[in-house]
Image (cartoon, rainbow, N blue to C red; front, side, top):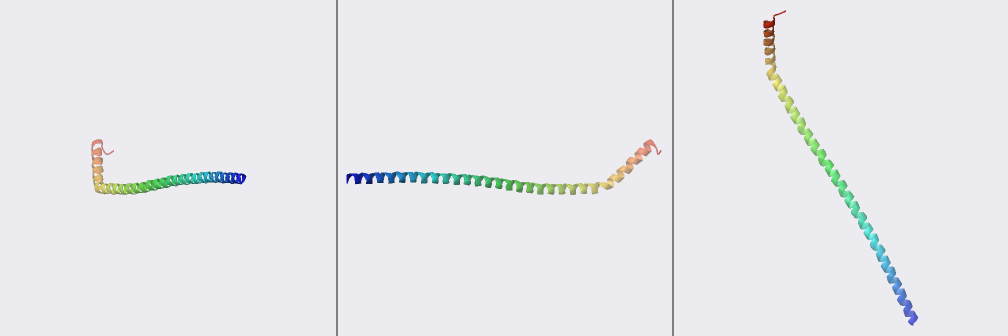
Length: 108
């Protein structure tokens, strides 16, 4: 009976040691899985942040481009209005300059 009890104790110790080893292996697997998930989460967060940054930059560029087109269009309209307003004066001034030059330096 003593040997039988010793065998049972050894068997129980071996089962316990195997259980501990199995638990350690399971813990290592879970730790590795958690690390992989964390790395994937960080990677996805970086990609998402980069994508949002690019989208915000693109939206800002489009807004600025539209604003620039509006400014250029308004300035072109002002320039055209200025030209139309002053083109009659140019004819008069050029005639006056021509008369002054001809009067001062002659016609020939």
